[in-house]
Amino acid sequence: MRKEFDPLALRDLARSMKQEGLIQPITVRKMGSAFELVVGERRLRAAQILGWKAIDARIIEINDEDAAVKGLIENLQRADLTPIEEARGFKQLVEPPYSLTQEAIAQRVGKSQTVVARTLALLDLPIEIQELMPRGIITETHTRSLRKISDRTLQIKLAREADRQQWSCKETERRVHDLLKESGEPLSRRISKAKPPAKDPLEHIWQPILETADQTGVKVSAVRYEGSGKWRLHVEANGAVDQRRALADFFIRLGQTLHGPLPSDLIDSIQ
Image 1 (cartoon, one colour):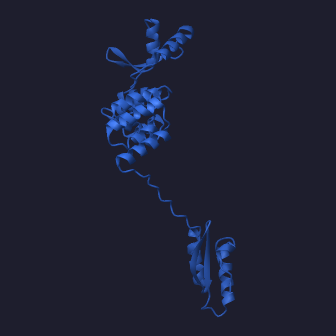
Image 2 (tube, rainbow, N blue to C red):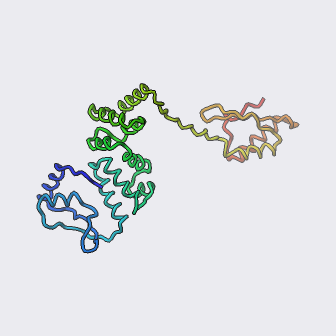
Image 3 (tube, rainbow, N blue to C red):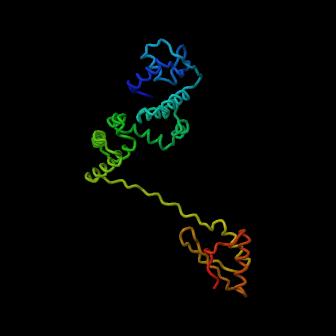
């Protein structure tokens, strides 16, 4: 997965290994008459810099899929892994022979499926932009704005300018917006997600209300939402001989059914 190694970082590691020795062995697996590296490529390269003829190694039995995932996870835990290298690693797992789903990859490497999808999408960018990303100025967030430009030549031009002038993500977004406006391209608007409807606070007591109303001969009507989670009921007892008694009976029974009195702000005053 890793294509580039910082020579300065490798020399620092080699110097540390020379002074302290190899603290953690590399991990390999048996492949016919040879061994294949699973984990520890930086340590192996540092050992080569030191001219070591041998290096301690731990041999494990592991299949192709687990070997690839294990190596990927070790690299993902390193801060110096570039976004493009990470994307290449994910792509290795998506393609045959592993053919893992994005969800499966996310579970194995401890990231969300959204992160995996966005990282893989980096490989759809022009190669010129991919080559800029290891410099650390252009990030995955920058590329979300750049993708809005349909002309890949303009994408590259703006990305290079953003890298050269070290634009922030916000500045890049603004520049892309201005460019699209000037060129007449449709501006993609952020679709606001509809807020879920407020949960009816009376949902769990509707049935007791209706049953109690039938028992006491009253009618519940004119339910009204008053904001801040407050609802108001209008209760009538026009068909009862003694309306006040019927209303009182309704509230008493309902309170007993609900194991407590109804909140006063849900009830119209008895006229």
